[in-house]
Length: 83
Image (cartoon, rainbow, N blue to C red):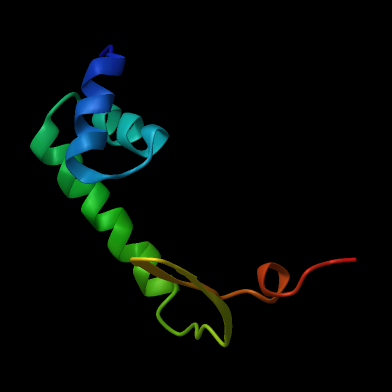
């Protein structure tokens, strides 16, 4: 079954998932949007389960007027700059 870019983009807007993840889900679901959404949900649960035990020990806080953002890194390679 041929999946159009328009269908992939629509699924991406509905779910917030990545383009390739949406395309793979639509191909696996044979074009059925509801089934594709369920497949993406299951994949997200698997990813969340893998990250469950991780703890963000280092991070940064960026403050701008009217905007505060916290950025937490969970791996040592992203937390420490390389020189």
